[in-house]
Amino acid sequence: MSSRNRVEVPEAKEAMNKFKFEVADELGVPLNHGYNGNLTSYQNGSVGGRMVQKMIHQQEEMMAGK
Image: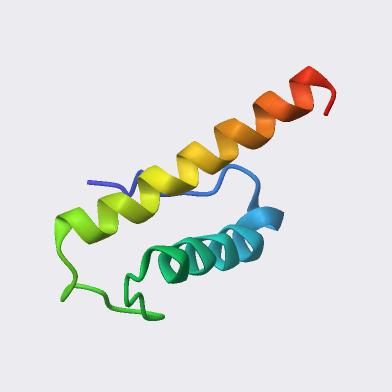
């Protein structure tokens, strides 16, 4: 099974990683570089979900001309 967590634009990989750690810090999720199997599904999901919320919000603002 291949990973579905791929970055569509390889040049954005580092920025996405930084964004993930910023969101995890904002939520108080102790995300580490490398293995994070000690985190719960809820913790991991909250980081991913919040990332999506922020990206949608930013895109909506761009589309609205803000």
